[in-house]
Length: 549
Image (tube, rainbow, N blue to C red; front, side, top):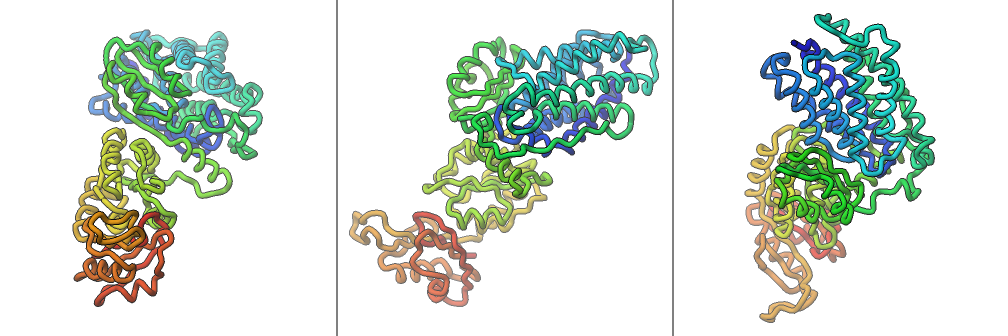
């Protein structure tokens, strides 16, 4: 029997996603449990977006010809694979549970009885995904919704639909059911502060539970063709989150990925993951699992699954950075989320001044520390955090190139590495970056810019030369990666600049930590008609980083 609700399914999902997207930051700000990393709105929105993208992919044929079974299976899988974080994974299980109930009732029209059964199965799926369910969260909210809808069936005039029904009549009937669910959800959201100490002490409702009511509100609006029912704005925490229960996980990386194989037994992986992390969720079936864990060692996590299937859709977030960004936002700092660009850029950098210069050019900086040596997962977390659909990565060191390429390979978000081998090269090339272009176009533009740049630097010798040319503390001058001068600082700088500035219009000099000479003294050493562009970089090890075009 043709299901008239199928043609309207996508528009309902789109409206729910749009409502959640419009309140994403509000939901983020409420996030204090289980980890105060401020990404619940992001994670739930990503799950909804994955469902919507899957429906768009299927839209090549009339949706009513595809069939309910294929649609709900595809939606459930998309939600599972697109989920990220605790809230996203639990939401994916709510979607999956509801979808499983719809599949189990072929030929039935979507009516109050079927919606009630779908809510009940969704609540069961959500609870079964968590080893130690906490009341006051989105688990409580979905169960409260399921109970209310089941209880109210007896009081509805039309609990069942049979035969032909006009779309408007069905939509209104479903909106009425969801309205009852929303009422119960809102009550559960408010009760959360009594059930969960972390919420009570922060003075907030649970972010995931509130996000769930936002989704249901969006669905009601779509079914009625009007604005969603109003939800009271929820204020962020009334005090700084310094209590132990509000702190981040003791682990650094929020790690998410999918595993595809056969005979996958999710239960056996959970205790293994709990030995190397916390906040463990493993959901799915014997062919596809979605894994979420907070850990310091994502490589070790992957190694647990690699013998059993193919690991894909790898995603890592640095929770320390998320907590810091959230704290700044709640303390009145700049909001982190911006309009999503076509392409963003991640750079490895060190030195306060250089980090500031890269940030002024729109880059997200991964601080490489004194040795400029960030890990693969620090770079991957940076790719994750860029507000862009695609990303280019500038390693800015030969030693970081391999880690950058591995991060780009692991990233679910399309990422390309432009092989910059120094910070000054990365800074000069970044002038050609355009966030409205694709990563491929930007990579080509930056590589073309790199071909016009000559780099160099002057640094103190860390040890005596075996060939007797210089001693510890002498100045060493390089052009590209070739040692071209050594000895006294002024003489070495003059010789290095002479080689570097040949036919150059502009010479850029970035002074490092403890650099002996200032801008005026440097300008006097620049040969010919070349113009000096001087910056304080604050980088360790190098007195001066140099670039010429």
